[in-house]
Image (tube, rainbow, N blue to C red):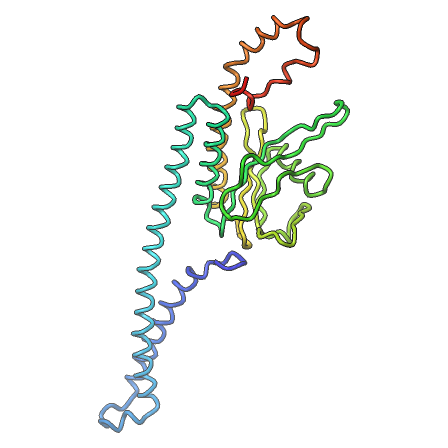
Length: 294
């Protein structure tokens, strides 16, 4: 795959057999018109020499084509096996979370496992997977400010992912709007995008996709998958990205349901504290992410 998203291996698989067939045809024609009844003297004729060279070249090209075909099949089997293993790993991560107590540690283990599997599942160059949560900024309520904050650590390439997307930059505001609207965006080239994109000079990524994740009725955050080369996001690649995000959504739903299980206990405790606890203590002070400690 080159920077334009063109699969050179696929092109070669078509061109090599065509060249071999053409050379075989030329060899046959030249042999027919070559006067072989002249014995060894016929080897001095140009058409005979070209016919012999073409025949040898045909054998070589045919051998190359056969070797490439075997190599392609082997790579395909390896890719299918890797995809199957990664898919199993993603399912195991969800299963492990389902059987856990769904504490903060369980959440972190699930996210780490899912992001790691995403780098194997997503068929893009040097994939890096990062998960962000959509947070509401603390203010007096007069401004509806949201920002994106990284959850845990990204997986894949060693370069660090952006820690936050803030609404005070064009790029941050655009990304936050995309996530809040529940949209999915696929950018093949950071230099050719229909919304503002900011990229540091030392950054390695050149293409990326943003896939929102959440629970029914609420966008929780977004999954970012980026590559170090320009990437054409085909329908297959988009389907893989959406599938990975769906696995993450299942985990988020499990964590949300675990938090909902303790909400009645919290409401009862709050009633008992009415008139005793400071007025600042309220429902907003409790979040699903604090379940383990509370």
